[in-house]
Image (cartoon, rainbow, N blue to C red; front, side, top):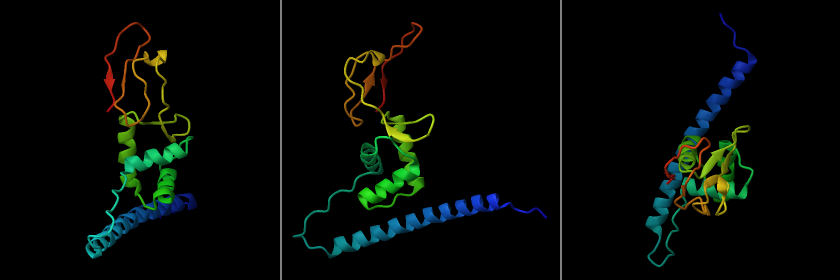
Length: 159
């Protein structure tokens, strides 16, 4: 009979709780959606139009603008909950973080693994050839890279 160490028990229990939390967040979103549907049916035509909700990607960018040093996925979830009064499941956040990274909007720190907005590069920066002024993570970014060693690369489109 193999005994489980206390450390193993804690790791297993932590995973169980995280899984349960994800399931509860999904159920909570379903409840909120149902409540909004009921509220929309009860509202009259004279009421103000409902503002469109921000996407997860928009919320991530907004909270990372406020927290310039970046943060972990769990911290981003907490910041979104505080700022937007909405719960996001980790399983919903992770693909959006990956998409933002592939779009060139986010980067991760090599030492701490924190998600951060890419720094904005002023026009004329020789490291990027000075081709474009990267002024907004939402802008279409085309950057000519000048590699070391003399070979030439094409312009990459990070949209």
